[in-house]
Image (cartoon, rainbow, N blue to C red; front, side, top):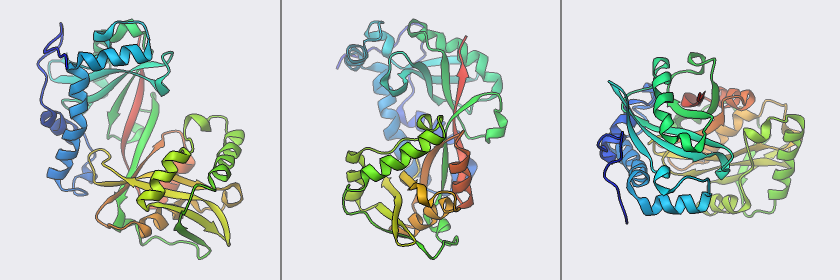
Length: 317
């Protein structure tokens, strides 16, 4: 592995554990009791090991440069730990939406303290380190409510709550879940997505059906379920177990209602039923929902899941 210890304009790199402590401090207070803090710090430390590799591994940067072929040489792809202002450092990286080189953006993956509105001009200045890619916008995390940033475009929000806290909400008698046995309904699920996309042209940018391969992974894990309503197949509800924002989580992979079951107020009950079928009440049921997908956000909130923060887009000059 070829590494670089420091590049011009970059301060000494912190350890992964230090990055984890910064990230934990930026999380919503409501989440602090949901996972043991030591476990959460370990989860975040593991995640930030990759941030550090992206900041130091020139061989990996060369692989990214070769694969993406966006123009600049390999060192330009390295993550940067930047001094943004006197009291703020940030880990910046160059990313591409959907790996599309025509859609670059600067990602703020870690900050040494929570980001405030006053920090945005300085973050924009720091993002110039990636000027060779001509990124039009920057993405950052905030645990603040959506109302705090009404002038910015939202990306995804994290909606979460302990599994045990979600099991007591009411569920219609004719709505049930059964373990998914195979991927035979995947085409029906795609048709359901297509119907929503046709009615709401913005929807493809907010949610997509998981692939057949990912569906099979959930089936193999025992945490994918067929939704049945009034005796008919009516969608999917499923998770995979892995950390999200450091939490010991069952992360939602799919919550889908077929067209005939939509519009009946069933969306919230899917989270409730899913919580009842998950094995560990101490885990957190968590998942991301686009900030403009008001229907899905409202359904998750009605089920008791809490908006604990999300990512925002800020334009770059």
